[in-house]
Length: 263
Image (cartoon, rainbow, N blue to C red; front, side, top):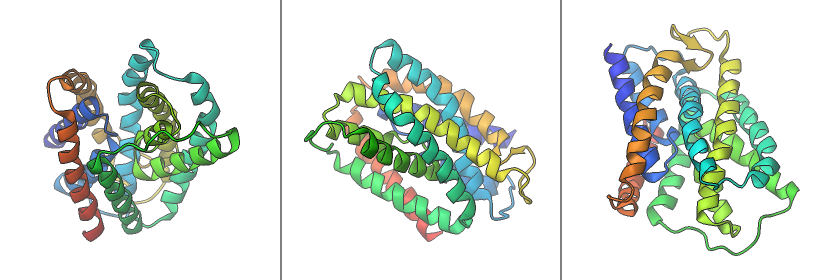
């Protein structure tokens, strides 16, 4: 019961931040799960980092559904752009999960830490790239999509932290960039989660109630409160200084990233 309470608190916190700041849950879920797993008695058999990332991706699948539906209702998703890039992003996500499976947990942890620090720096600076060009052609767009999918799968996130700045740089309106990134994040996290299920299937040393590299008790505990608290966070965006909170949160991300590197 204590474990479920801890997972529920994590789900509430990540859902609140997702609604308030549009932050991908994996940046919080993965390092916090790695902190919680030993507390609830999960022994490290070399798979805990993979389990944390796989579980984060599976949680994002569920939590992003309502977000995508909301953006679609408001007409923000550029489905033509989605159609052009989604195939390569899905391929990249599957590729990323395969790469992650081959990496020892400690190396995967360091990779996560470095990327999280880079995202924290971009978020803390608070500058979006200036719109200097239009969207690239289909080949460079899909090269980018493959990289996004692979990185997102390795990080346990939907990839919006990568696609949104890119779309803004390519003269896509902020509303459309955010909405389309949210839509892309759903198949990205689904493909990545599936990859972690398949690559983890039959591995020795996994805890009970694991579905490949997805730990079902944590998934259930995170998903339900995140559904509840994401709309609350979205409702608070007009009342709280989101820009200031985002900069404070970037410091938290940097600390989490550094912790991943040194421990």
